[in-house]
Image: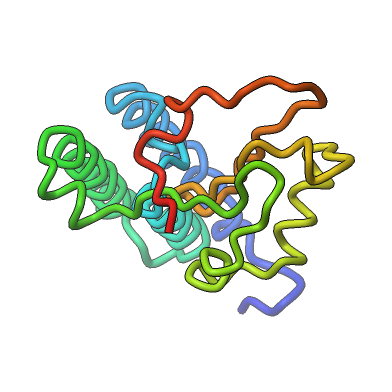
Length: 174
């Protein structure tokens, strides 16, 4: 009988075998589908990564789960993610339907408060990102973009360099 502190040797053995087997399957799937599998390029990629982690944990920790079922679940998640990425790349309609455009939060040293409100980002969060990017003065900031992944990109310098307009291509202004 198991308790919170100990487990029987057969259960521990199954956990170790499950780890080796399922991570081998995961490595094979990742090699086939490519490095993008765990890239955080969109909210869908993030959700897929969480789903993969959940399946891995379930297979490893639940002695009643089959490795075959887990491998098929992992393969299905990665296949669906790959199909989703292909549709986003090939179809403008699907891209517009399924992904968020990046949003401009700051431009030329000025905070765009309406965009902060639309994106539910607090001014304190923005300022924390500016500190993280070693910004010393708002005047250094050329742009801050809330990316479709939820990350903030801070484009800044300490001189009079002009921001290349291509860097803001596809970014919503308001």
